[in-house]
Length: 143
Image (cartoon, rainbow, N blue to C red; front, side, top):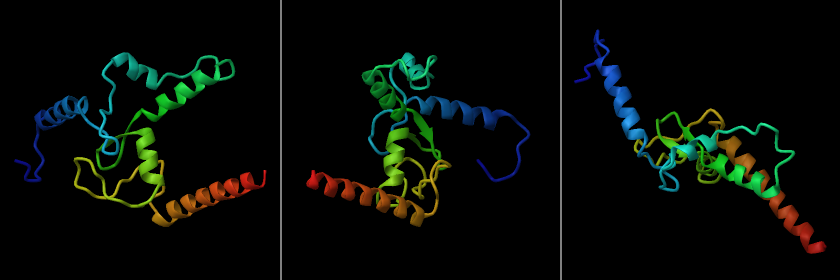
C-alpha cells in the first residue's frame, strides 16, 4: 500500500508504533538468540539502574553482577535490529569485521554510533588487543 505519496493521516504512524511495540517484546538477539528483554519487567529496570552511592561501597560480587547486567541491556542498531550490549560489542569488535546483520533486517552491515564504521579501524584495534594479550602471555612465561 506504500506508494511513496504522503498520506494525511496518523493511521500509518499509529500502525507502525503498535507493530513495533508488540513485536519488540518478543525480539531476539541475532548473536545469542535469546530474548532481548527479560521476562520480568523488574529485571529490565535493574539493567538501567544507576548506583546511588557509587561503586566504592559495593562488594566485588555486586560489581561483577552489575557489569553482567550492563551486558544484557537492549541496544538498537541502525538496521532496526536489537542486540544485547555485550553481544553487539563482541559482534562489532571481533572478526569478521563488517559482517552482515543476522537479524530480521535486510542483511546489510551492522552500524551503531558507538563503533567506528571503518573496518580498518576495527581491525587495528583488534590486532592491538591481540598483541597485548600475546605480550602478557609471554611475560607470564618469564615469571
